[in-house]
Image (cartoon, rainbow, N blue to C red; front, side, top):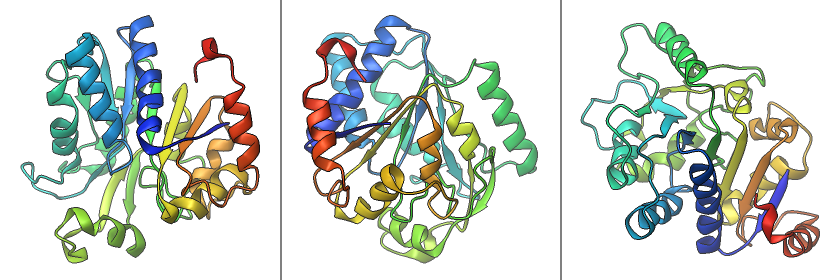
Amino acid sequence: MEVVIAPGAELARIAADAVERLLRARPTAVLGLATGSSPLAVYDELARRHTRDGLSFARARAFMLDEYVGLPADHPQRYRNVIETEFASRVDLPPGAVLGPDGLAQDLVAACAAYEHAIADAGGVDLQLLGIGTDGHVAFNEPGSSLASRTRIKTLTRQTREDNARFFDDDVAQVPTHCLTQGLATIMSARHLVLLAQGRGKAEAVHQLVEGPVSALWPATVLQHHPHVTVLVDDAAASRLQLGDYYRETYAAKPAWQGL
C-alpha cells in the first residue's frame, strides 16, 4: 500500500495522472468510477485533460461502485445521473460505456448477479477510484460487511445516511435506506485501487485503513491485502497516521518514472 500525503488539488492531479497513464498505454482500459465528493476534483481534472490535451475515453469502459435502490430514473442524486453529469458527459465516453447496478430492477438479487457477470465479461476493472466513509465503509460496504462479499443489496447505516444528507437538501429522511453495491471481494478484484480522502473527518478511517488491523468493523482495511493500492490523502486526513513522516519521505524520494 502506497500512501501519498499532499494538498487536495495535488491529489486530484496525481489520481488523474494514473488514469491518463493507463489510457495512453491501453485505450480500451476498464475504469471503476466512484461517487461522493472525493473523486469530483479528479473528474474535473480528467475533463480538462480531455478538452485541453485530447485525452480520449472513446474506447474505454467504466463500471460504477454502487447505486441507491428505488430512486426514480430522473432523480439528480441517482448515481447513474451523478456520474453522467460530473464525468461521462464531459468526456467522449460512448453511450452505454458506463454501467452501474440497477437500483430499479424488479429482481434485485438477479440484477446484482448480472452486474458481477458484466464486470467479469469486460475482463475486470483496471483502475478503480474509491473514497472512504467516516466509519470506514468503502463503496456501500458498511461496518460488519463480509470481506468476501460480492455485489449485493445493503442497508445503509444511520451514519452514512446522515453523511449523505447534504446531497438531499440536508434531509436525512430523503436518503434511501438501501443500495446495491459492489462487494469488498469485487473491489479487490480490480488491478489497481486508488483511494482519495480529505478532511479531518476522515482521519480515523484513514488511520484504520492504513495502520489498523484488518477487520469487518472497518471494511476498507481489507485493502491492505491488495497488491496495488494507492491512498491519496491531504494533511488533515493524514493527521492520525503514526507513520505520516515516513510516508512523506518515501513519496518524496520516489523515482519519477515509477508512477503510482
